Image (tube, rainbow, N blue to C red; front, side):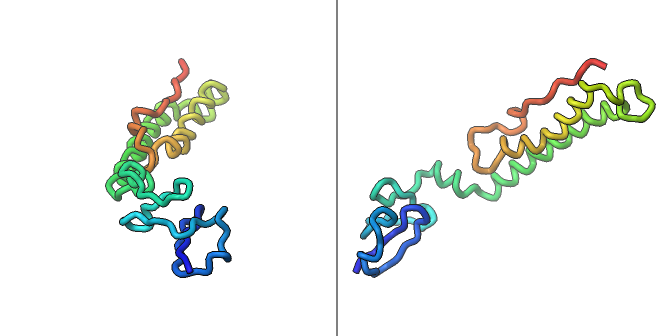
Length: 141
């Protein structure tokens, strides 16, 4: 009887019949780190503890998530202000209503918050928030 851990799911089983578990999918009798199972990572035939950086990425704190949510709110506030600056171009009697550049600019602003969600995430420690956003350039009107 042996202990096994699945290489992909990190499922751990104690006292199992080893021939029932393929070494391709399972590590037999692994030496386990002295940490919570959620912090285990598989490296070849070893089970290691994640580094502090890996833990931060895999399990962000509530504060980090709240900061990122606040950054998204700041982006939306700025985006909404920029949209308001060109709202007048979209009224029925505006000569710029069908201006392709204005329409593209406004669409880029609306898409910005969706694009920003990919840029600012709780697990991405390399981004610096809204300063990393590439704002569309307002066309001359």
